[in-house]
Length: 229
Ligand code: DHB
Ligand code: MG
Image (cartoon, rainbow, N blue to C red; front, top):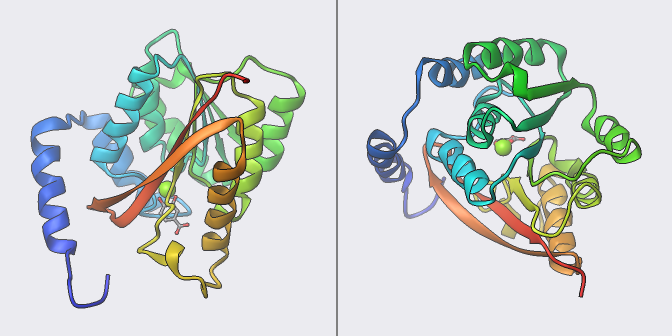
């Protein structure tokens, strides 16, 4: 972050304070986080406090079926898979085969491989197959893949939801770029489209929260699918 106030150091110190006291990572989670370096998007995984946050949300929602767009090394996937318990199922989409191989190894190491279905390929195609199948609705959807496709991912998530389904979108702040009307970044344009849809679609109640910490300044959009009026 640039400007008169450089908060990065104190954000990280506070995040570390909480992580040290609240977030327990076993060897498999540490390994998954560190193996992010071997994915197509090094460092794009969620932070430990954010992974634990996703797990808490999954437990609050009583989620059994989770859909994730964007696996990378599977760090968030493992948090979600552990939160839903052995009878749960996570379907997660990864476009890159070599990255998927890293994730597969991490799922075995974490003891959750049997509850995760990793689908390799463009997520727009993978999710269309689920919509067409059709499959049982998901209880929680985490949208964390290529940002320009966010509107398509939200549409598909809504099609695969039921009243009460929680839908979370990652990286909606991007160091404040979301509030720069002149941004030419296609990832920001994808975020704008996601936020517009969340605001206008009567099927979902949503908000967004900024986050600071080890991953800098970013944020989550979070919504819940409504009962039809
Ligand atoms: C980017 C994507 C992510 O999902 C993330 O958490 C951080 C960065 C990116 O597209 O740059
Ligand atoms: Mg992300």
